[in-house]
Length: 178
Image 1 (cartoon, rainbow, N blue to C red):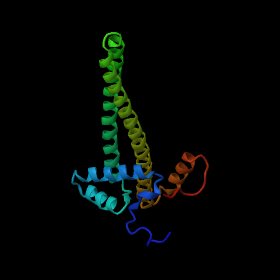
Image 2 (image 1 turned 90 degrees about the horizontal axis):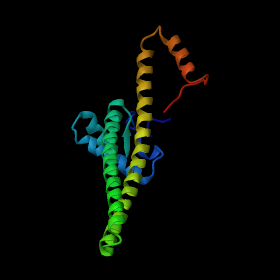
Image 3 (image 1 turned 180 degrees about the vertical axis):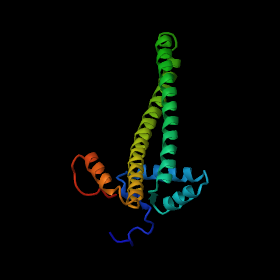
């Protein structure tokens, strides 16, 4: 664990997160979008992103998590709209198929286009959910580390904390490191 591998101890290479290239691109885009908010942690996250790193502090991870929640909400709304449209198209095709074959063909083409958009959005949704889940896990780990660091400075509560930690990990020994 040499410090030369990670010049910033609050960041890790985004290539070590278990993401596909497309997901890494989405993660980096998300970090850049968060940076547009203009906070100092957002600017630090943007710098880290441009260097292929993910900031591991809880503030950056929280902002990134909120961003992905908003993106997923937008995708979900778009999916719902497109599904409604596909039902309308389906009913329209059914009602008009006997009378207007040409119109039905246009609606079917529109339906295929809508379905392709739905497939693409569902894929994006799954990718972003995967990224968000990883970000949430790292955020949880970062918060646990921060709490552990706070407690280690407290002195007398370390015995109680150790007991609590071993109870939560169901008897496993050792510390979890990220």
